[in-house]
Image (cartoon, rainbow, N blue to C red; front, side, top):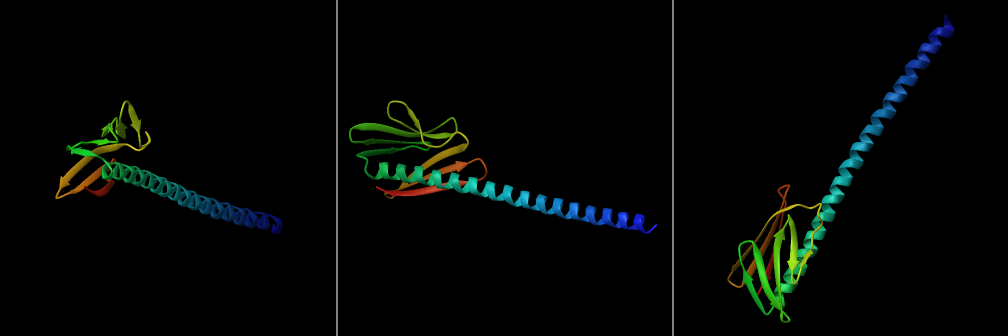
Amino acid sequence: MRHGFAYVQLQVYFTLLVLILGGSMLALGNILRRDLAWQQRLQETVLVQNVLDKMVEDIKYADTVAVYADRVLLTRDGADYVYLLNNQRLARRKDAYLYLTPAGLALQSLSADYQNGLLEIVLHGGKGQAWTRLARR
């Protein structure tokens, strides 16, 4: 009788150990998944900010700039460039499209507003994200 009780007690302890380990592994998996999603959003933000910085630099040193609601046309060093949204990606076109943002990052809109010598460029992402840059001309 004593051996049977010890066996049941051992099974209970083993079951508790499995439940504790399983719960901790599940919690660790959720933490890692959240961290990975946060890291991906951070990489997207850095990438879009770098693209906007390049765009502002081009605009700053451009000879002429024409601003429309959904695109920016500029002339720099005798070459015409167009920044526009094509297939949900920001593209710069000289002779052909040069995509500046990856395909995985879907952009919903590009808007530009020029007032009082200050150009505001706004990119809107799919998850309520918005990236803004100001350029002085």
